[in-house]
Image 1: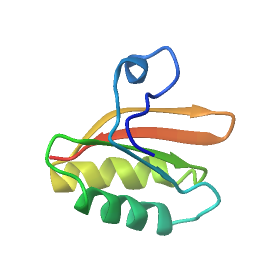
Image 2 (image 1 turned 90 degrees about the vertical axis):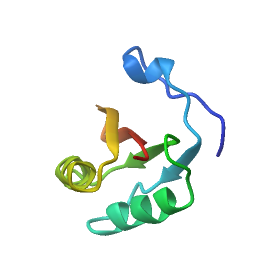
Image 3 (image 1 turned 120 degrees about the vertical axis):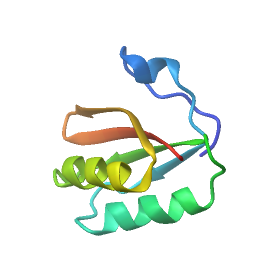
Image 4 (image 1 turned 30 degrees about the vertical axis):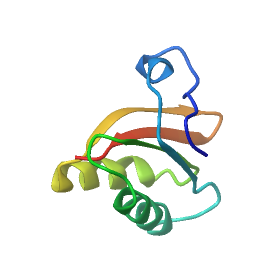
Length: 89
């Protein structure tokens, strides 16, 4: 999905995203692998929104963005779904 807006009342409510990937129901390492693949399709500065249910994704995505120069703009958990906004570096 392209051109949507993240929900919620935090910073993410103000940010548009360029691509959304749904990794709900997938366990480590699949959410991270899907994120890596999605980022390869984006230009620098574009934002991907990721939906995940794997609690390990919090740590995995945090470490990944630190090591690769991407930016975790926001993340939150809503009723068991983790929602991330990641900007490609």
